[in-house]
Image (cartoon, rainbow, N blue to C red; front, top):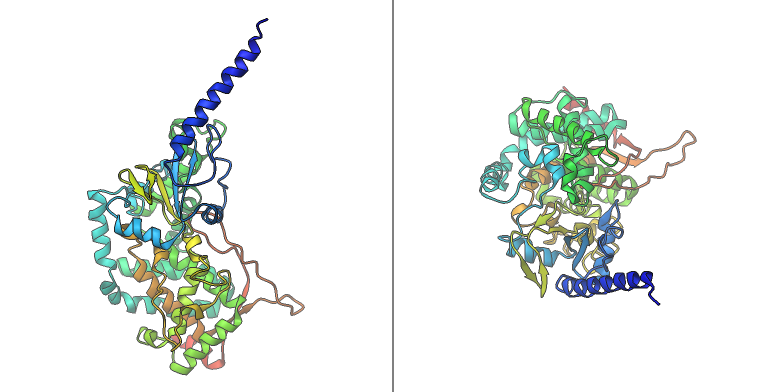
Length: 462
């Protein structure tokens, strides 16, 4: 007797067996990683929020080089500094491209930002111009502007400490505008500050290869009213903000490293008072209490340097950095890396490497100090990226952060806020998702360390 439904079942089973055998042969060439499901690959394995934590777990399971696949698109994750250095530094000729992101085009970032531009002659020319203005020796010319804006920041903190995060954004924007154009911005409500916050905020949420329209590029042509296509409205609005940033008198791009790292510094000082006390003790011992720190003091304040480095490590500003892409097929440790595949440097995993950073979740500046009290050679430069794609503004960011942290520690005490009954309000040290990960809103108390400190700050406003 003939049973057609058995034939169908056997046929489907045969198709599955053929697919499975082929996928085993095909995926055996790629680096190890989670086993993919038919058709969808690892779509269900990659979380929509904070994927760097999942990638770190995969690193512990599969090694420093991990592969996963989403709907036929291959992705690579690097979980160690050594391997990232090998690929992005030593093989930078191959690994300096960026993956094409539909959202980057729709939001307008690909054409205006060297960070998102594909590797090529145009990118090299733009990069050369930027590096010329932001190289280490050139940044020294900007130190007076940075210190001036830092002093203004202290005055703003004294007058309105509750809005310290707005003051941080103003400080970062004021330095960028002052250095680039020689102009002052209006205030914490400056139009260009708010404009850049909106544009870059959208980029944080939509600038990853895993976003649905980056997986299915054809969706960019679908009308916004279709289910799942509401991103079209967001992309158009972001494009308007980005265009305004370029067409207005200022091409404003807020230094997000400064903004987010400085907010993390305030968070850490409120949670770790013993670190703050030691840092203030170093400043008092080396500088005294009659003046504020200057850049000439930086080599004499190793613990402040260690606080800066630990701030960058404790919660990296961009836990996955910006994805690289291979310009050609390559073999790494015997595994196949296909041309064009997005490659993430999992900076989060690198900062949690317990063979380098014991007790990684704690804020411990002492990890950067040698027995004689000087700083070791771990300058945390990998936080700014790797190879030809390393952030060209890293020197400017470092100087801005040092001036801000040293000045705040010299002038203010940062403690947990208290409720009406005088009890300390515990701080939730949660961080956001996105390309840029910043601390959530939190309250802290910011008060002058003494009457002398108050007088020093007040004198800056004259």
